[in-house]
Length: 83
Image 1 (tube, rainbow, N blue to C red):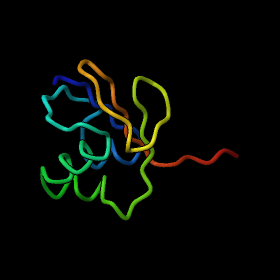
Image 2 (image 1 turned 90 degrees about the vertical axis):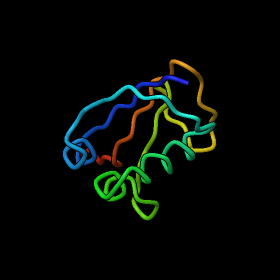
Image 3 (image 1 turned 60 degrees about the horizontal axis):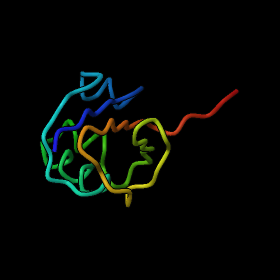
Image 4 (image 1 turned 90 degrees about the horizontal axis):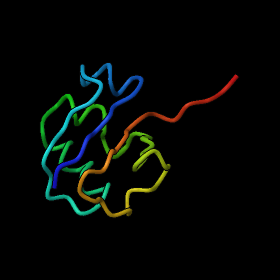
């Protein structure tokens, strides 16, 4: 399926891009995260399992067990605190 992935804040800085379109066989956001981590050290550093990473599917905050759908927009970003 074809999806759009957006990266924000420190994740965007490390990966050096704000978004990308990609084809994936991942069935869930967690599987997509693992697929991206397997791409190499830059993705692994940003999306590592030990790091707190928030995820959104079509602009709704979700956890990684949520199913992906064709044409989805997925966003990855670090937790943010207000002040």
